[in-house]
Length: 222
Image 1 (cartoon, one colour):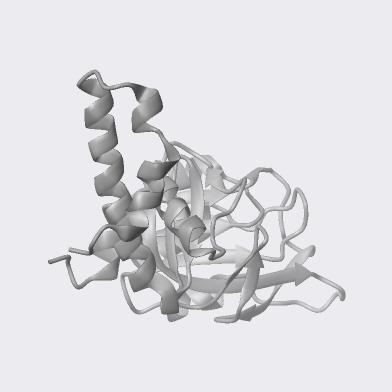
Image 2 (cartoon, helix red, strand yellow; image 1 turned 180 degrees about the vertical axis):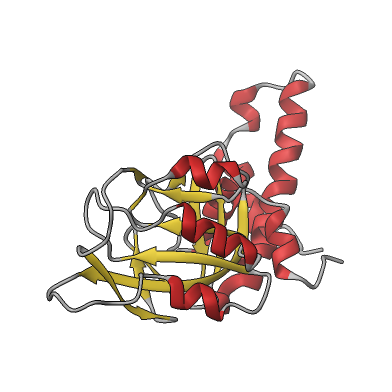
């Protein structure tokens, strides 16, 4: 029987397999362009969403994202940030240190980070579109948190599931996670068997035939 903990099950997979499961189920969630911004480890966790936007006045504001970090009280969180400006930082090493102290698992930005060496120095995973040196100060503000946000073309809600690795970032809606995990685990078993078949000398053309992939959906759950 699989572990009852969806995060443990998700951590045993990779973004490719989860993306395949979403494809089979015709569900959104796979993104393009949100890659590790240093040579960091995989992130698996639950989304804490943050919506940013351009600063439109001269009033002083709290530093963006800090209120969200201060309120975190569990160890399963991944900060998911959207709404920044092109080429402007949404993340930096002071925030990384604060998040690390709160045992946040990592940050995914539909945008840019500065001070990336500071995140790397403490082993804090950051995924995003790229690295910049340009500060968010007086350019970007936090508009909301724990709300639905659009991240690289897909909608992410508070508490959705996140998996990010060297191939990219995938989000799984909380209401679909059991269905996605069960299918992703079947895909993993089938693909492992296909790799073993190729290594044993079977024809790759036969092993990779579409019928083998179609059969994944008929395989009984374990």
